[in-house]
Image 1 (cartoon, chains in turn purple, green):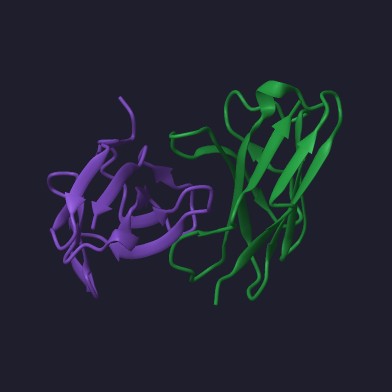
Image 2 (tube, chains in turn blue, brown):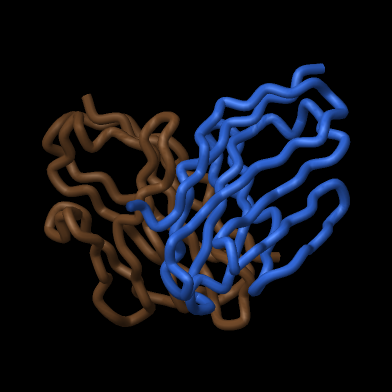
Length: 111
Length: 115
């Protein structure tokens, strides 16, 4: 079983839709959770960083962590064509330690 | 803040040559740098973790004699692909982190094509 599971998609939504991206994991020691956005042929950029369970909101983006279910989500409200990218979840057990990445979900927002 | 650069952004070389890729943290001191490779439409595959001044820790299946990593300073790590072959063609991405940082900060990647 992989450490982190993520549906690769692809996911296609109309502009303005709410997008839900999810990852599950198996290691209960994970306590740092991140979402990265990667445009084609570019390096990933950090979108959201959360510690332990709970919600975190930043503009149109909301990250949720449910440690009891080993499940994390990223919601994108009012999706825009510029949100079209691959979204990677990542997590680690200790700050600064090795990260475990999901395979990434390819998202296309159609104008 | 937290900018990481990579050079070159793209390199094409002949089979059998060696290629060096540089990763620099521009505005912070990186205690740890990571090297990944990524094949088209696949996720990041961690190759090695390097801490400044010490030997890199390689992931299982990654040949340390083929992928030489040097982390000589707190702002620079290099990856040298020795005797490159076409199967080494990939997108190589570095990332860096430091104590107190939230997450890893990625470079823009280097696309290596070996003919």
